Image (cartoon, rainbow, N blue to C red; front, side, top):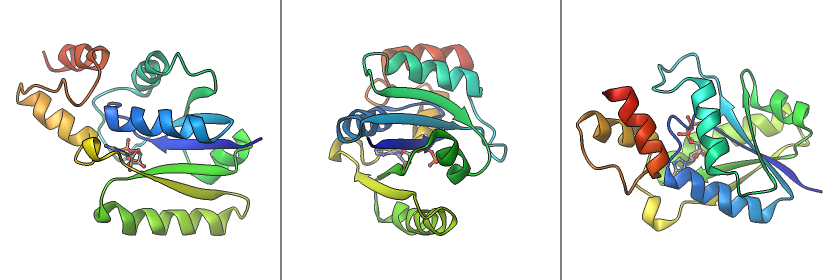
Length: 158
Ligand code: ADP
């Protein structure tokens, strides 16, 4: 039985994240999307709002659970009895940091391995920061996030 954690800030969740969730949910038996309480970033959405959006958007997946966490990812993985971490790789720029994190996590917890899914080409440019930047400037974000998320973003910026 394989159980994986897909960690991230998801502020907000984009089509790129949902693509990784859908694809990894097919690979592992159970997938926990871990929403990081990140005190160093000033988020647009509270942790509860991010969890609620993800729950709504993944309700059709029977093997996906959304849980918030803070502290070390390997501690969260241990708590959840997960032995896999899933990360998305968009470009070479993601690689160096991701490699360092994967190796660090593996040294801290030998039982945990990181697998990387390369982004679908159509989402390779996409990040939560880009979505927020375009939204603040009143641009069209319908190709980046689902309608449900657009409504939540509009509430924040209006
Ligand atoms: P973090 O702050 O941990 O990078 P994010 O919410 O930005 O959190 O991203 C979470 C994970 O999703 C990361 O592994 C990131 O590389 C991946 N990701 C983000 N955007 C995309 C995308 N457009 N396509 C594929 N993976 C993505």
